[in-house]
Image (cartoon, rainbow, N blue to C red; front, side, top):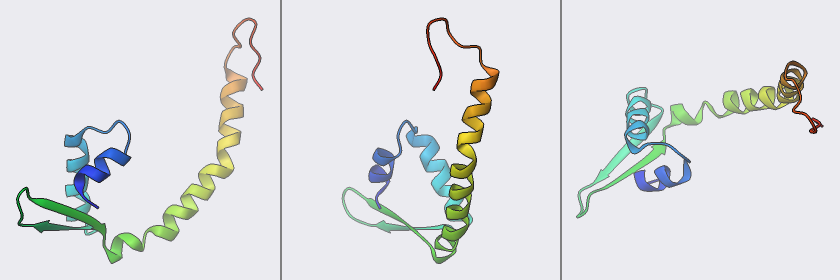
Length: 89
């Protein structure tokens, strides 16, 4: 995926921040970077095999977060004073 495509699909991220994270992931061999010597230059990023191997761990983390999200929301609501005239459901 090209840098501009990544930047468009990740909401509210600064280009500089995205570029820094991409460089870090490349250093850690989680992604590969392919540069095409065209005009204008094209740079493509993709998951490396090492990056793809994180898929099951990330899926398990997502499952855990989804399981406990309702508990967290309920706890925040218990600790938050309701606004007059509004009810939490």
